[in-house]
Image (cartoon, rainbow, N blue to C red; front, side, top):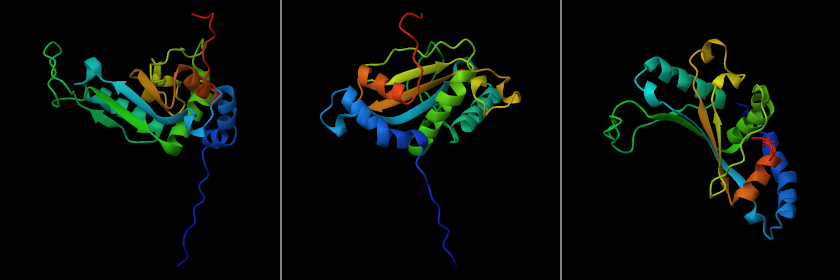
Length: 193
């Protein structure tokens, strides 16, 4: 029997990072060691179920959306704490959120599609916000999933938003922004609010 050989190529953005962006970032940020460079560790795409957590149709629509957009099966998140006011018990009942964690090749492919295909489809787009957390991670909120070209018109009838979190290793606010700008994420200009 002949052995099947598969040739896997690195995603475009990962290849650019290792060949070009890493050297440019080291010079721009004035870093002495390549291990100090900021790098993308993971991307988490999540949807909170909120008030519709008992609606089975909505939960299936959210799972279908996340599967098609990321190419990976989502995971349901149950409540960690009991909150009497919201009638939530820890670990029981319907999920409070659904999420997908992307790493490796899928992470870079998702980022490439997000920057080059999805964000240009947003109407009246002036760039994404410029706020980073203390660790240099970045959160991007999307209010309508219909901007993703992977979804058909029928799949966007139940509108829901999603949160995209970029976890950046060795990042601070300046280094993380420089890294995401290299990848092509369009930040809004300082004068626009």
